[in-house]
Image (tube, rainbow, N blue to C red):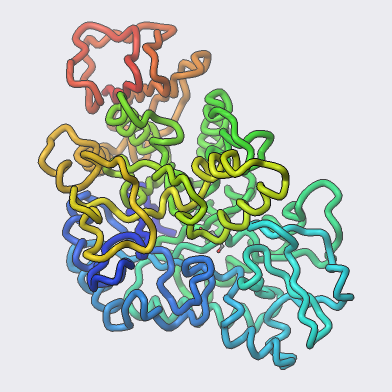
Length: 544
Ligand code: NOJ
C-alpha cells in the first residue's frame, strides 16, 4: 500500500463549482476550465463528488448508472478530457463510489421491483405487513429506514432517502458488479476512489429492533465489512491507488484496521467525531456551542491511537455535508481572516492527509438563508418538517437549519465579485450568500496576505518538511481549553504548532523561548523575536 502523507486533496462539488454552459448548474467542463487554478494551489488530487447518471434526489449520491454521466454535468468525452487534462498538470482524479446503495431508478432495482428474483437478491427485502416495518430503524434523513412495496408484499431497506435502496453485499454477484465498476473507471485513468459510507455495507445476519437508538449500532462497521473491503481491493488491484473510506459513526479500532497498510483495505478514512462537538447530546438538529475540550480530546485520542497502531487519517474540517468551518468555529466578522487561517493551520499540520473543500481556501461562510424556499437539500427539507412537527417555531427551525444544513456548503464557488460570483452567467440553482465582499478568488489572488495564499503556503510546507508528513505527534498545553497545540517530531527536526481557537487573547502556560527558533508560518504579520507568552485572537504559529 502506498503512503499519501505528501499529498493534499482538493474536493469539488461539481454542481456548485463552475458552470461552463450558462444553465446555472456547475459541470465537468467548468472543472476543466479551472484546472490551472487547482494546480496553483499545489494539491495533488481532485476528489469530485458523483456526476454519474442520477435522478439527483440526493445530488448524485443516488446513482442510476455507475458507468454513465449525468447529462446535467456533461458526457463521457468531458470526463475523459478531465482525466487527461488533470493528468497533464500532475493532478490525479478521485471518483466517488456510492456502493452502499443505488437509486431506486437503477435498472437493478427496477428489475427487483418487477419481481425478478436475481435482482431482488441485490437489495435487502424483507417480508411483512404494510403497517409493520421489519425493524424500528430510522433513516439518516429522517423517518423509517424501510419502505413497503405493495406489489411484492415486502419492505426494502434504505438507510438514506427512500429513493436510495441499500445493496445486499452478502450476495457475491453484487460484489462482482461493483468490482466491474471500479475496473471500468480504473481503466479510464482514474487515480483514486472515495467510498461513500463504506462502513455501512455489511448488515447483520438477524435484523432486530433497536431499543436504544436508530439501529446504527447493528450495521455500522458490520460483521463482514473488512472481509468485503479486502476482497474489493484485491480483486480490482487498487492497493496502490489513493482510497479513502467515508466512515459513518465509526470507532478508532475499526479505522485502524481499515487503514493499517498491512491489512490492504484503504489508504485512509474520514471520521466525523470532531464535527459533532456542537451537537447537543449528540443530536445533529439540537444546537450547542462548540465544546473545545471535547474537540481536543477527540483529536488527541484519534491522532495518538492511529499513530500508535499504524492507522492513517484523512484530516479535514469541510466537505459538502458540513456547514462552513469559519461560520462554525471561527469568526465571520472582525477576525474572519485570522480565524480562517488558524483553522486551516490547525488541521493541515496534524498527522494525516489533508483535504480542502472548494471555497474553504478563500474562507467561504454559511449563506444564512432566511426562508425554507432557499433550501434544496433533501435532508434539510425533511428535517425542517420534523422540527416543525416536534413543536419548533418557523424561526427556530430556520435557525437550526441555518447552522446545520448541508446547503451551507453547497452554495456556488465564489470566483469573483460579480453578481453570480463568476460561477455562472445565469441564476444559480442555489442562492449565493449576500454578504461576501472579498471572499472570492479574484480579490484574494491579488493579496499576498489572503486566506487563499495562506492555504498555498500550507500545502507547500507539507511538500518541504518531512516532519509535517511523517513526523510523530505529541499534544501540549492540554490544560488551556482554547489552545490546540502540538509538537511534531521528525528526522529533519521538530516543529511546534500553536492555535488559539478563541476570539480572546490567551496566555500560554509556559513561555516559548524563540532563541534559535524560526517561525515557518503565522497569521499575524509582526514577528515574535524573543519569546511567546500569549496568543492573540485566533492566532496560529508554526515554529521550527
Ligand atoms: C455521504 C455523502 O457524503 C452524502 O452527501 C450522502 O447524502 C450520503 N453519504 C448518502 O449517500
